[in-house]
Length: 398
View (cartoon, one colour):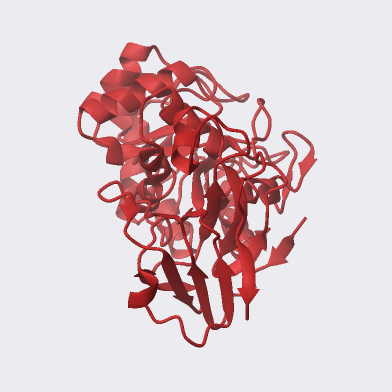
């Protein structure tokens, strides 16, 4: 367990050498011709060949021993409450466990599992601001949790969204989990949120918790939220044809989640790829939920889309990193200069039929996590949750 109050990034230079496979997170160029990465004060300074980058005066050196290096994974859809505890499954340290699955950033889709969650307008705004402040100041396991996502309710006016934005709230919880369920009413509130810089996500499919209800394709299209949340259902999906129609008729982000319909997730991904719109696809777990907590949920989604959906392993990693970062307006998610030094070291799982990290995903296996770095700080070595990696990185100098 590694609970940590935000202490800021690593100070000084971090050098990562002998990287066997440099995975950029960018669909335009998923694999980089590079074996060395340099970060200074918690941000990437250079990615390239060892002979071409300045590795002198390193405060810390990590030898990757041929492992793959990827941006830290991003979970686009979680439901935190306070700290590293979820009352939904009466479980502690779930966020820290996700970090052992390679996740370095999480995005809240609403703090909906808080016992007694306030539904009056003053109360829901107070909860959102409190959650945003609390997770900004406290990072379980070092994970960056973007929280404070209010569930909109009837009676909210534009000034409420202006007030939330001014207080630092940048997300809406799933539209449809509260009393606002009609498309026209949702569209107005989504527009107010967008005007004030707040990103919106809409619940898609059948009801998930008491108080939620069916949100069908027509409501999703009319509301026009920024992210079509769990387009493959959370848990119950819309008919596959309706989901494919959403992919075709909307230009918004297509979010696929672990706690949804796997068949429909594959169908949505394939439609997006056929449309040349794979950049719209992002991954989440939609957890904690009735299905539980899935520390390896993002890795499992990558293996599903690659092993059964035909994506290359490198493309699957992009969906969980660069795609989500761009759509969610996050600083991380890509291995390029100026980005946060948030990384996951991956290697093929011991005895996997896949010959390397990417083929491991392509045959449907989970790769092993050998180390997780957030803001240049090592947060975990060999994962306690993934299958053991064949190779793991090693700190070899300071």
